[in-house]
Length: 251
Image 1 (tube, rainbow, N blue to C red):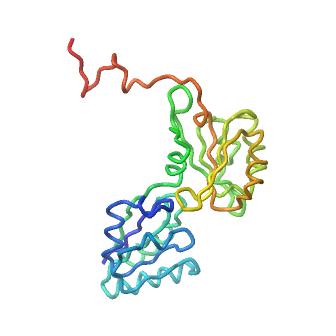
Image 2: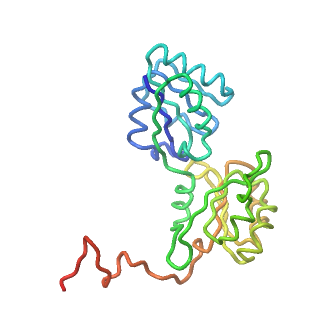
Image 3: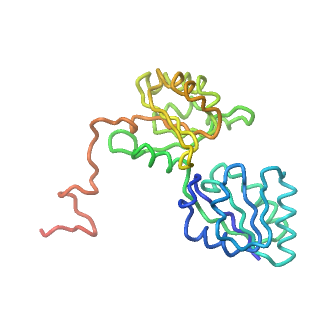
Protein backbone atom coordinates (compact mmCIF):
# COMPACT_ATOMS: atom_id res chain seq x y z
CA UNK A 1 0.00 0.00 0.00
CA UNK A 2 1.33 3.45 -0.93
CA UNK A 3 0.08 7.00 -0.45
CA UNK A 4 0.72 9.00 -3.63
CA UNK A 5 0.93 12.77 -3.15
CA UNK A 6 -0.12 13.91 -6.61
CA UNK A 7 0.26 17.40 -8.03
CA UNK A 8 -2.93 18.05 -10.01
CA UNK A 9 -1.59 21.21 -11.65
CA UNK A 10 -3.02 24.73 -11.46
CA UNK A 11 -6.62 23.96 -12.48
CA UNK A 12 -6.87 22.86 -16.10
CA UNK A 13 -7.48 19.08 -15.85
CA UNK A 14 -5.29 18.54 -18.92
CA UNK A 15 -2.26 19.95 -17.09
CA UNK A 16 -1.91 16.97 -14.79
CA UNK A 17 0.97 14.61 -15.55
CA UNK A 18 0.37 11.27 -17.25
CA UNK A 19 1.58 9.48 -14.12
CA UNK A 20 -0.69 11.50 -11.86
CA UNK A 21 -3.70 10.80 -14.06
CA UNK A 22 -2.90 7.08 -14.20
CA UNK A 23 -2.71 6.85 -10.41
CA UNK A 24 -5.96 8.76 -9.90
CA UNK A 25 -7.69 6.34 -12.25
CA UNK A 26 -6.25 3.25 -10.57
CA UNK A 27 -6.15 3.95 -6.83
CA UNK A 28 -9.10 2.57 -4.83
CA UNK A 29 -9.07 5.58 -2.48
CA UNK A 30 -8.85 9.26 -3.46
CA UNK A 31 -8.44 12.15 -1.05
CA UNK A 32 -8.43 15.49 -2.85
CA UNK A 33 -8.17 19.13 -1.79
CA UNK A 34 -11.53 20.16 -3.17
CA UNK A 35 -11.10 23.85 -2.44
CA UNK A 36 -8.35 24.07 -5.08
CA UNK A 37 -8.60 20.90 -7.18
CA UNK A 38 -11.49 20.74 -9.70
CA UNK A 39 -13.50 17.52 -9.77
CA UNK A 40 -12.74 17.24 -13.49
CA UNK A 41 -9.22 16.13 -12.50
CA UNK A 42 -10.79 12.97 -11.06
CA UNK A 43 -12.63 12.08 -14.28
CA UNK A 44 -12.34 8.42 -15.20
CA UNK A 45 -11.57 7.15 -11.70
CA UNK A 46 -12.85 3.84 -10.39
CA UNK A 47 -12.16 4.47 -6.71
CA UNK A 48 -14.26 2.84 -4.02
CA UNK A 49 -14.02 5.96 -1.89
CA UNK A 50 -13.53 9.63 -2.84
CA UNK A 51 -13.19 12.23 -0.09
CA UNK A 52 -13.02 16.00 -0.42
CA UNK A 53 -10.64 16.97 2.39
CA UNK A 54 -11.36 20.72 2.27
CA UNK A 55 -13.15 20.64 5.65
CA UNK A 56 -10.90 18.05 7.34
CA UNK A 57 -8.04 18.74 9.74
CA UNK A 58 -4.66 16.99 9.73
CA UNK A 59 -5.62 14.29 12.22
CA UNK A 60 -8.76 13.41 10.25
CA UNK A 61 -6.82 13.20 6.98
CA UNK A 62 -4.09 11.04 8.51
CA UNK A 63 -6.73 8.76 10.01
CA UNK A 64 -8.21 8.16 6.54
CA UNK A 65 -4.75 7.37 5.19
CA UNK A 66 -4.10 5.02 8.10
CA UNK A 67 -7.39 3.19 7.61
CA UNK A 68 -6.63 2.71 3.90
CA UNK A 69 -3.21 1.37 4.85
CA UNK A 70 -4.79 -1.19 7.16
CA UNK A 71 -7.00 -2.33 4.26
CA UNK A 72 -3.98 -2.57 1.98
CA UNK A 73 -5.33 0.11 -0.39
CA UNK A 74 -3.29 2.61 -2.38
CA UNK A 75 -4.36 6.24 -1.93
CA UNK A 76 -4.24 9.09 -4.41
CA UNK A 77 -3.75 12.16 -2.21
CA UNK A 78 -4.40 14.93 -4.72
CA UNK A 79 -3.09 18.47 -4.16
CA UNK A 80 -3.21 21.52 -6.42
CA UNK A 81 -0.19 22.70 -8.40
CA UNK A 82 2.98 20.95 -7.33
CA UNK A 83 2.63 19.41 -3.86
CA UNK A 84 6.14 20.45 -2.82
CA UNK A 85 5.15 24.14 -2.97
CA UNK A 86 2.75 25.35 -0.27
CA UNK A 87 1.08 21.94 -0.36
CA UNK A 88 1.31 21.23 3.39
CA UNK A 89 2.54 17.73 2.59
CA UNK A 90 5.46 17.97 5.02
CA UNK A 91 3.26 17.54 8.07
CA UNK A 92 1.38 14.66 6.44
CA UNK A 93 4.64 12.94 5.53
CA UNK A 94 5.89 13.30 9.09
CA UNK A 95 2.80 11.47 10.35
CA UNK A 96 3.08 8.76 7.67
CA UNK A 97 6.71 8.11 8.59
CA UNK A 98 5.76 7.77 12.24
CA UNK A 99 3.10 5.21 11.27
CA UNK A 100 5.40 3.35 8.87
CA UNK A 101 3.18 4.06 5.85
CA UNK A 102 4.99 4.22 2.48
CA UNK A 103 4.46 7.25 0.26
CA UNK A 104 5.59 8.74 -3.04
CA UNK A 105 5.45 12.29 -4.39
CA UNK A 106 4.31 12.87 -7.98
CA UNK A 107 5.22 16.41 -9.08
CA UNK A 108 2.81 18.69 -10.89
CA UNK A 109 2.67 21.86 -12.98
CA UNK A 110 3.04 24.93 -10.78
CA UNK A 111 0.77 27.96 -10.75
CA UNK A 112 3.83 30.05 -11.61
CA UNK A 113 4.40 28.05 -14.79
CA UNK A 114 0.74 28.38 -15.76
CA UNK A 115 0.84 32.15 -15.21
CA UNK A 116 4.00 32.55 -17.29
CA UNK A 117 2.37 30.60 -20.12
CA UNK A 118 -0.75 32.76 -19.90
CA UNK A 119 1.33 35.94 -20.09
CA UNK A 120 3.45 34.48 -22.92
CA UNK A 121 6.55 35.26 -20.87
CA UNK A 122 9.90 33.68 -20.16
CA UNK A 123 10.73 34.29 -16.51
CA UNK A 124 14.51 34.14 -17.00
CA UNK A 125 16.03 36.29 -19.75
CA UNK A 126 19.73 36.93 -20.44
CA UNK A 127 20.82 40.25 -19.02
CA UNK A 128 17.42 40.85 -17.39
CA UNK A 129 16.95 38.17 -14.73
CA UNK A 130 18.45 34.73 -14.31
CA UNK A 131 16.78 34.09 -10.96
CA UNK A 132 13.19 33.30 -10.02
CA UNK A 133 12.13 33.59 -6.39
CA UNK A 134 8.91 31.86 -5.33
CA UNK A 135 7.61 33.19 -2.05
CA UNK A 136 4.49 34.18 -0.13
CA UNK A 137 3.53 37.29 1.76
CA UNK A 138 3.65 36.70 5.49
CA UNK A 139 0.60 37.81 7.45
CA UNK A 140 -0.93 35.26 9.84
CA UNK A 141 2.12 32.99 9.47
CA UNK A 142 5.29 35.06 9.82
CA UNK A 143 8.17 34.61 7.39
CA UNK A 144 11.52 33.28 8.65
CA UNK A 145 14.21 35.86 9.36
CA UNK A 146 15.80 37.10 6.15
CA UNK A 147 12.85 36.06 3.99
CA UNK A 148 10.68 39.14 4.38
CA UNK A 149 9.71 40.59 1.03
CA UNK A 150 11.98 43.63 1.35
CA UNK A 151 14.92 41.24 1.90
CA UNK A 152 14.11 39.27 -1.24
CA UNK A 153 13.41 42.40 -3.26
CA UNK A 154 17.02 43.53 -2.88
CA UNK A 155 17.98 40.89 -5.46
CA UNK A 156 15.69 42.50 -8.07
CA UNK A 157 15.07 39.01 -9.45
CA UNK A 158 11.79 37.82 -10.96
CA UNK A 159 9.32 37.31 -8.11
CA UNK A 160 6.32 34.99 -7.90
CA UNK A 161 4.32 35.94 -4.80
CA UNK A 162 1.62 33.59 -3.50
CA UNK A 163 -1.18 34.46 -1.08
CA UNK A 164 -0.67 38.19 -1.27
CA UNK A 165 -3.35 39.84 -3.36
CA UNK A 166 -5.20 41.18 -0.31
CA UNK A 167 -1.97 42.84 0.84
CA UNK A 168 -1.12 44.31 -2.54
CA UNK A 169 -0.63 47.90 -1.26
CA UNK A 170 1.88 46.69 1.32
CA UNK A 171 3.64 44.51 -1.27
CA UNK A 172 3.94 47.42 -3.70
CA UNK A 173 5.33 49.60 -0.92
CA UNK A 174 8.08 47.08 -0.14
CA UNK A 175 9.00 46.53 -3.80
CA UNK A 176 9.10 50.15 -4.99
CA UNK A 177 12.50 51.10 -3.50
CA UNK A 178 14.17 48.15 -5.23
CA UNK A 179 12.31 47.70 -8.53
CA UNK A 180 11.15 51.24 -9.31
CA UNK A 181 7.68 52.55 -10.09
CA UNK A 182 7.93 51.56 -13.76
CA UNK A 183 8.65 47.88 -13.05
CA UNK A 184 6.14 45.54 -14.72
CA UNK A 185 3.83 43.49 -12.53
CA UNK A 186 0.97 41.10 -13.26
CA UNK A 187 -1.76 39.71 -11.03
CA UNK A 188 -3.30 36.48 -12.30
CA UNK A 189 -6.56 35.14 -10.87
CA UNK A 190 -7.20 31.36 -11.09
CA UNK A 191 -4.74 30.68 -13.89
CA UNK A 192 -5.87 27.92 -16.30
CA UNK A 193 -9.39 27.69 -14.78
CA UNK A 194 -12.38 28.50 -17.03
CA UNK A 195 -12.83 31.84 -15.23
CA UNK A 196 -9.16 32.85 -15.30
CA UNK A 197 -8.49 36.57 -15.47
CA UNK A 198 -5.50 38.84 -15.07
CA UNK A 199 -4.22 42.40 -15.19
CA UNK A 200 -0.82 43.77 -16.11
CA UNK A 201 0.65 47.10 -15.23
CA UNK A 202 3.48 48.68 -13.27
CA UNK A 203 4.10 49.10 -9.57
CA UNK A 204 2.74 52.62 -10.01
CA UNK A 205 -0.71 51.65 -11.30
CA UNK A 206 -1.35 47.98 -10.46
CA UNK A 207 -3.36 48.65 -7.28
CA UNK A 208 -6.09 50.51 -9.13
CA UNK A 209 -6.23 47.87 -11.86
CA UNK A 210 -6.59 45.02 -9.36
CA UNK A 211 -9.22 46.94 -7.39
CA UNK A 212 -11.25 47.34 -10.57
CA UNK A 213 -11.15 43.57 -11.08
CA UNK A 214 -11.94 42.91 -7.40
CA UNK A 215 -9.43 40.06 -7.10
CA UNK A 216 -9.48 38.94 -3.47
CA UNK A 217 -8.08 35.39 -3.38
CA UNK A 218 -6.58 32.58 -5.49
CA UNK A 219 -4.29 34.99 -7.32
CA UNK A 220 -0.57 34.96 -8.04
CA UNK A 221 1.57 38.08 -8.34
CA UNK A 222 4.47 38.13 -10.83
CA UNK A 223 6.98 40.97 -10.68
CA UNK A 224 10.04 41.72 -12.79
CA UNK A 225 11.52 43.29 -15.88
CA UNK A 226 11.11 39.99 -17.76
CA UNK A 227 7.40 40.81 -18.13
CA UNK A 228 8.26 43.74 -20.42
CA UNK A 229 11.93 43.27 -21.21
CA UNK A 230 12.29 45.27 -24.42
CA UNK A 231 15.80 44.56 -25.68
CA UNK A 232 17.66 41.68 -24.07
CA UNK A 233 20.73 39.68 -24.97
CA UNK A 234 20.36 36.46 -26.91
CA UNK A 235 21.39 33.31 -25.11
CA UNK A 236 24.46 31.33 -26.12
CA UNK A 237 22.32 28.23 -26.55
CA UNK A 238 21.29 28.92 -30.15
CA UNK A 239 24.19 31.18 -31.13
CA UNK A 240 25.70 29.81 -34.35
CA UNK A 241 29.18 30.50 -33.00
CA UNK A 242 28.60 28.62 -29.76
CA UNK A 243 30.01 25.08 -29.80
CA UNK A 244 28.90 22.34 -27.44
CA UNK A 245 28.57 18.57 -27.23
CA UNK A 246 25.68 18.37 -29.70
CA UNK A 247 26.93 21.13 -32.01
CA UNK A 248 30.73 20.79 -32.03
CA UNK A 249 31.32 22.61 -35.32
CA UNK A 250 33.40 21.54 -38.26
CA UNK A 251 36.78 23.12 -37.39
